[in-house]
Picture 1: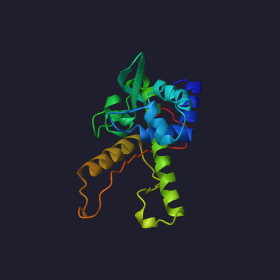
Picture 2: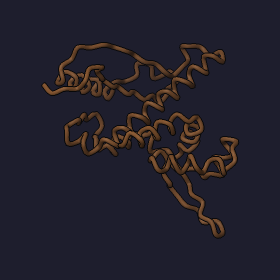
Picture 3: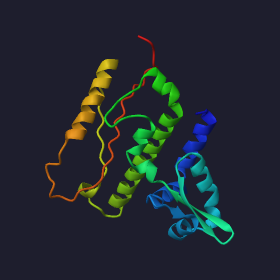
Length: 199
């Protein structure tokens, strides 16, 4: 992905209206511009441009087209961003880590898009939970948490750690099934501030 295209995607994801469109368009069956305008309390004419940009970047997909008199009304959905099919799009099986040179070279754009979308989702969740607390909600009722660690790892150790974490999350059973259950996303990223280099 060119730096210009990446900048445009970053600007798009930073737009609060874009996030509201993504949330409203989550159902698989999709939503029309007219329905979106009603939910967002916006004029339909104010939504066509961001929706076209979102469609160009794959954030929205046209899932149906309705013929109304002489016009074609498109139905948009962001459902593909919110399910594990994103991992399949990248050619990964669940719990499989594959960062070979060939894979990265062939999927750079998809990987950048994947990471940016997930970062946007994470920041949106954080913002919602902070708004909830500021409105008087209790900290122990939020559905956002994080952990930060600093590790000394070899390249092979890095892969082994991620495999173990993936296996742990796959096998984990909630010890409190009687409590209300929520759908959580866990994104684990290992990164170094050092420049990448050959051995």
